[in-house]
Length: 424
Figure (cartoon, one colour):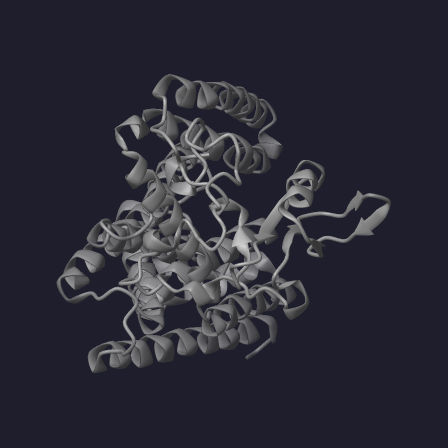
């Protein structure tokens, strides 16, 4: 694993319990208490029946000393010697229990780094991953071009199982983790663990509703017939320029062309949206999405191919561009993995766009991405990290954006009804 993820090769002590002196919690001094996620209550409390004991929370079902323990079940022992005997047989443990600490200790924080990372050993770990991912990528891409009827599916599989691991391994190999001091490694490891847990506690109810709405719109498209639905309300270029149907700049970002399309876009929007609402403001997500759907649609209209375009990808790439600016703005305090993963996604999407240019509207992708970057740069001077209150202007933008998006959904429903009812 990478340094930011708390497990760099060669950085941990051989005995994971050596750092746990009775009554001490080694990572307490590294918790970033001046940041929103610097709170010990993000760690799960030890159940009352396990306090004062040693123990392990099983990450999968396991049998020890003839007794069966289920996934997530605590295995409790009384002495440290029993604890040391327990650890090798437990398999994958998610958390540990110590008698002097009232919180479950995540496996990622069991042992601190004791020495700096040896670059050669670190890079050797990723060389194998890189070449394996390269072979998978080449194989699947080649299959996609050899069998055109399966090209889209092959390229999607190549992206998931090839390009993402390939770019991740390449970026990790290039990272000079040997320049991090032991203190840096431990600070980054603790910061990552607490940030990850904090991110999981952030509310995303409105985002979930938004993704459900996109799915329902797609269901409506299927009921009306996908080709006809695209003609009725997606970005049909001549209908915009010739007939003045500029509302299609918005409605096209709420529609999709296939089950795979809505599946991947829904997951991507939820993943990026969670980070936006956590780092900046829940109210901003709708505005960022709407703004970049429009910039993506405009780019497609004037720079893209002549055929119809459909999908939320412009808005999703806009969220990606916006987050790149946000994470750059707060790069000194955010875990490094977050920005690295955004850069990785940008590289992968660019490569995927080039490989799939026959069926991907790269102009819409690029227009949305650039729109997100510009919007992020414009808002950057007054951004606050995880603010506890929302500025009035942001609330106004949120209300207007949500209203326009809802009107867009209504317009799609109306146009689908008109197209399916003779004489309507």
